[in-house]
Image (tube, rainbow, N blue to C red; front, side):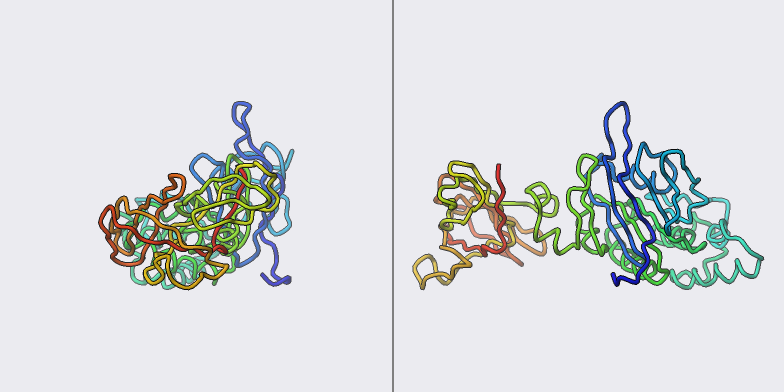
Length: 360
């Protein structure tokens, strides 16, 4: 974000506990106008509680929340949700069943009838529901209801949009298109967006920045590319994809693997380390077969493996291998259809710059 872009939402050391146990532990973040931040993490990590405290639906145990620089939550300060200039979207669209689409969208609007009608019409057009104003919610599909809920949340032009798993109830076939259209609209409106999700694919698709939570704390924050490609620990890496893990002992800042010695600086002699490789970063080497020209330093040496099983998943095939190295087992992801029979011997290669080294 450019330096001139104003910070709409600022959270500092936000905390909340239940029964003496911390649920949200000193969470801090900042979201600028037009920026989308995804609060990502497994169920029970505290992300929805964080969102509710920012919204004002729950009281914070400590810390501060500021919207456009205005203090709305702190010790002794609690501005009610309706006075915070926030829009709210949840998994349950919570449309009023007895009100029309137009009445749902205009429910929280102020001003005269013509002003309200103009804003409602503008939003119906933006969410591709022109002509749907007289309909009732039960006459709409799930995707259409989600767009009405989005329009209603955007109607008062909130400074901050808070979204808690808003797409999880949608059919998979509709989800990507609706997410893309929602993101486009949110950017147009210029609100700061905080989206809670447990789906890494959704966070990667929508976020300008990801804040990954675990056990009530933000453990890593950054652009999707950086969080994915430079995880701070194995648990962060595993949240985004399956992993292959090779364990070994560091000796002289080197650890032996099926693919040769890995540099493991910073780990003392005798310390166990884990070399972590994503399945898509294993390559089956049909040409070299372990007998051709010397590999590049980035690739290391080929490793011989025996196929245990293979299965086709639609866009890719997964092949499990038993390696000729201390009983190691690895899984490779291969684009398209590739189903070698069990017992087939193949050679594997890796890109070392795609591997991670973590202490145990």
